[in-house]
Image (cartoon, rainbow, N blue to C red; front, side, top):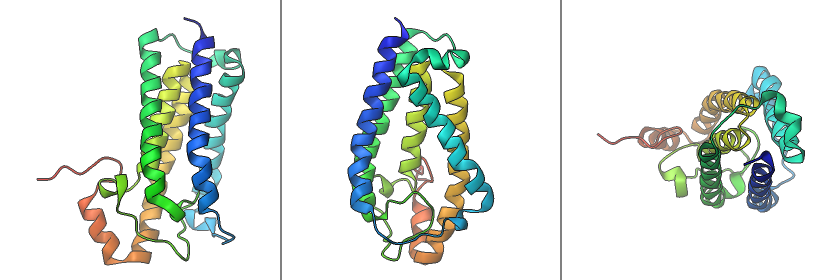
Length: 196
């Protein structure tokens, strides 16, 4: 099976993700200015460029798989289709996550004036399901495209998001105090906590 089929799988997944996220971004938009410097200089200098490299490489593959042939690897067809399953799981988690997040959706760790503590939907069990969506999507993309550069850049992006989540949690604890600290005790950061 050639890359032509998997190119269209990626295009379909990308279109689906945009279709799911765009309405929520529009509904969550405000004119409020958020101070992204609270993320830290290192995060500001690394996360967006790494994310840009990830998405530009995925878009390059969708335009023409030959553009990313320099970093392709041989994978069995069944494993590439497994990537599509990860992508579908990511989209399903997005569909569940975004309505729960509501107006709190931003592209930074800074809380809004009207920010609320979200503990419904997947947030009942994990504190950062949106980041889990990103991990599933990038891993799925790497398998679909059979591309090591997409895998490595996705790993870098998720690692940076994991680091940023600590700053985000500090912001949320400062904002919501004991309510957030209690929430942290009963939930996992990226995976549900196992009860003892």
